[in-house]
Amino acid sequence: MQCGPNTPILKQKYVLTAKEKKGPLRNDILQKRLKLPFEEIFGLSSAIQKRFSLLTEFKHAKRMALYASFKNEVLTDDIIKQALADGKEVFFPRIIRRDSRGSRGLVFLKINGKNDLVQGSYEIQEPAHNKGTEIGAISSFNIIVLPGIAFDKNGNRLGYGKGYYDRMLGGIKDRCLIVALAFDFQILDEIPAETHDMKMDRIITESRVINTVKISRPQGWVS
Image 1 (cartoon, rainbow, N blue to C red):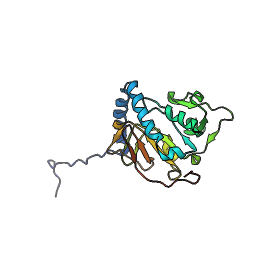
Image 2: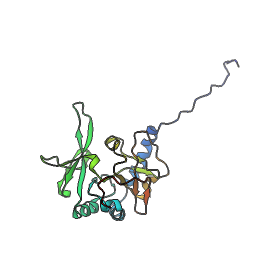
Image 3: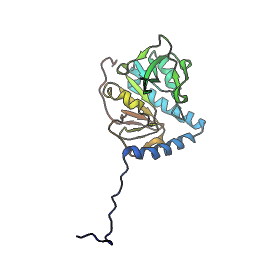
Image 4: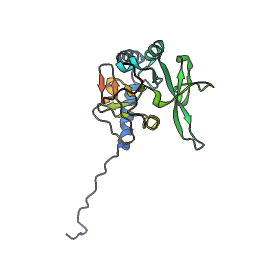
């Protein structure tokens, strides 16, 4: 077929990449979460933390990593108190500069209580990096608890876009249980995922525990 001046030009439809889809979705869910009153955050968080405390893996865990809530994330205060009361070793992430170019990453530091946390990067509560503070090797944790903006039933997670957890946890997927705490409205049918994105093993909300994958217990678990 010859092309003339009146021949219609077929425009190729542009398909958004997973990264491009994440931006509007991230903003939508985050804004919804930010509108929640503290009373609701507190009540829902209490229910979620109670469900978490009933996990067999939590009861048997010796070392675990938690997070300090930020921008109306699920609170973790009750988990901290119970874990420490049970004699577990608890670690929190701290953002550090990894090289002279300003590249940043996470390191997990041991705490003995919430008083060990100070305001750090992005106004998030972090452990103070004092001399002698124990740094926890990622491979030594039985459970790592993560926050996030949205999740789906397949275990995909939508974070803030910095990639700190994805880079840190990429090599330990089968060595410990990775758990996300979220409110029900943060659970979507599908999250746009990229190859480097970490998947959750469990997602706990105020109404359910979503088991996305079953893993064998690492060496050292008490049965």
